[in-house]
Length: 144
Image (cartoon, rainbow, N blue to C red; front, side, top):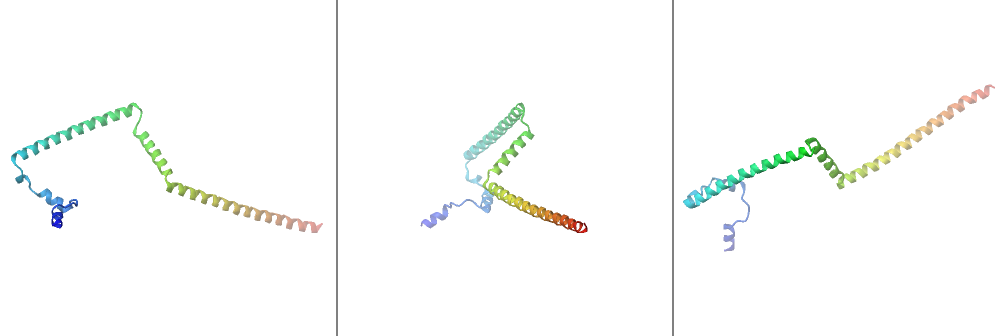
């Protein structure tokens, strides 16, 4: 018995085809004239309220623009603020911090490696210079 009751009172949301069937159904024949009149009046009232809300929103948006102009706020300043705020948000993420730390560490390692290579090259050139000077001075000493 409970299984039958559950089937009549479905708790699942409507699916697309169910919504289509519901939209195409004509319920006006099930309503009395009084109920139809009440629904029509409610519909008119809702449409009026929506129109009023749109007008109020429009007026508030105009007022907002006026205040921003008086404060010297313009689109470019807002974009700069949004970009700065966004960049700050990115920098405070864990992923950014870890990436920054890893790249910084890799940069330090690369700098140390290049320094070591540079030192080795300098040492080789120094040895070569010493060797060249020494080989040039040896024959000169032999001639004397």
